[in-house]
Length: 155
Image 1 (tube, helix red, strand yellow):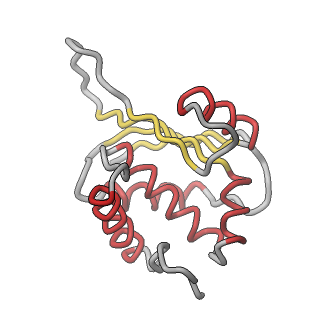
Image 2 (cartoon, rainbow, N blue to C red):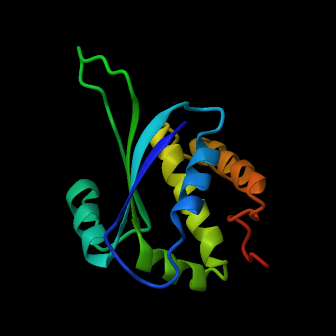
C-alpha cells in the first residue's frame, strides 16, 4: 500500500478531497512502484513562486513542482521514498478555467503528471514528452478523464 502524506497549506474552495488525491496517486503508481511514500503539499501563489525561483530559477508560481528523492550513496533504505510534489491550488484553478477543463480533472492530471516526474519521466525533448504524455493519457483514461492535451475538453 502506498503512503501519501498530504499537507494543506492553503484553504480555498475547489480543493479535492484526500480520497481523490490518494486515488490519483495510486493510479499513477500502478505498475511502476509498490509501497511508495511521497508527500503532496498544496500551496498558495507565494510559496509556489518562491520554490520555483529557488529551485528552477524561474519567476512566478507554477502548477506543480516535483522533488524526486535521491538516496544518498552508501545508504540503504527499507522504504520506497519517491519524493515531494508541491501543487499550487490557485494556479490550477486559473488554468482549469482558461483551458475549459473540469477542476477535478485538471487536479488529477497535474497530480499524475507530478507523480510521473517522481518516477523519472520528463518532457525535456519531444520524444520524452510524447512518452510521458501517452502515460498520462492512459492513466487518466482509467480514471474516466479525457485526454488533457486535446485543445478543448468537453464534459
